[in-house]
Structure formats: C-alpha cells, structure tokens
Image (cartoon, rainbow, N blue to C red; front, side, top):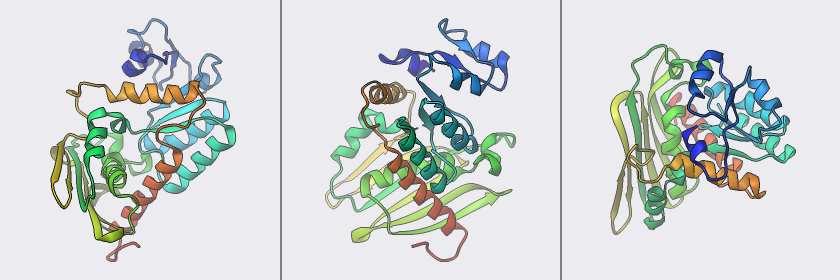
Length: 282
C-alpha cells in the first residue's frame, strides 16, 4: 500500500479484509481510501481498474480468475499459483479477457539486482539461498492446504533468479525435510544445458539468510540480500507498481509475463516431485 500510494501512476481506492475493523485501521493513513464490505465489493467497484492480491497462496487462483472476469487487471503476489497447471489457467484467463496479469516478484525491479544480473557473463554455476526462522505454528505458511512450505514461499525466489541467469533447467534433483505435509527445508540441484548448474536452498529453519553467488570462468559474483532489504536506496515495490501501472495505462506487455510465471512454477513442481523420489526428475 505505501508503494502504491507513493507511485506516480497509481491511486489507492479500496481495501477489503476478512475483518472490516482491521481494514478501517489499515486505511487510516490514506484519506482517499475506503474499506470495502467484501472482496467481491472491490471487484464490483467501477473506480477500481486493477487489484493487488496478497492473499494466501491457495487463494491466488480463484480471486485472480474472479478479478479478471470482472474486468480488473491483476498484480498477484508470488508464487503466482499452487502449481504450473493453476498458473497456466490464470494466464489463459488473462489472455482471454485482455486484462494484464503480473506476478509480484518485486526483487526483479531492484536496480542493483538488475545491474548485478547484467554484469554476469558466461555463468557456470549459481548458488541461491533464502531462509528464515518460522516459529509460529499458526502461521499460514505452515498449512499445506493454504500453499504453505519453504519452497513456495521463498524457494520461488531462488528458482526465479537461477532461471533468470541460466535459462531453463533440463534436470532436477531435490531433497526436502517436511513436517505435517509442509516442507520446512528444500534443497535442489538444477542442471542446465552445457553442464551448467544451480544449487537452490529454501528454509523455515535457519537464521535470516539471503545470498546469491554466481561462478563464471573469470570471476565469482556475490550479492547479499538479493531478494529484498530495508536498506535498498530504491523501493523495488514502488518500481514494480509503477511498471505494472505503465502496462495497464499504455496497453503494454507486463515486465514479468504470465508465461515466465508458468515456467517458474513448472520448475517448482519438478522440485517437489524430485524431493519425493529417490531419482532425479528429467
């Protein structure tokens, strides 16, 4: 909400919450906003051109489909869906309705991260990790039915950046440690054409951990906290919102097309499959 409020091409209009009183508290700093009676009320509001969906992962697909059908553009939190099949259905709905759909991978709009990626040449190995300690058993990230688990929550970043640098993997080997049907830690080795590889790691069982390391024949590149930091001089959320707004206002393709999100989900699906098997998924 602060990023939308600060953007040069967006305006906060309406917020819906399961708790109306909570919604009223949240919008207090934004006099132009109103608390909607329901999610559906937001979609029926003629002043709303686009919606941001930050709901739990299991709600991404149904509310994206409803928003697109209501004629609203959609900026949906990562991961776009629970599976590649769901993401593909969402992408097809966006194409059919002519509405814009973009996954909110804000780190891809960070100028420092983009400069880092642009500097890398001829990468032969990528090592990406993202972990933190999740100690609240009531957190939705601990609910399998809600799309919980470390792989979907933070592993989606490590897979995304590996593919950004190396392309599409041709082989996947993975292992996971799970509790109550939710992966607490997942590690995967991705094989790419030409013998290039990526090691990705996601966890709810570690101190705060964010690293990106890229090995090339001539140099090793490394960046701390590649997926977001409060100390970034540019707000990647605001840059993401403004990019999405430009696509809506000027009828341009979004910076992260749905096809990219589907491809990322396909790799996440393969990691989940490989983590449950003793053989690599190819």
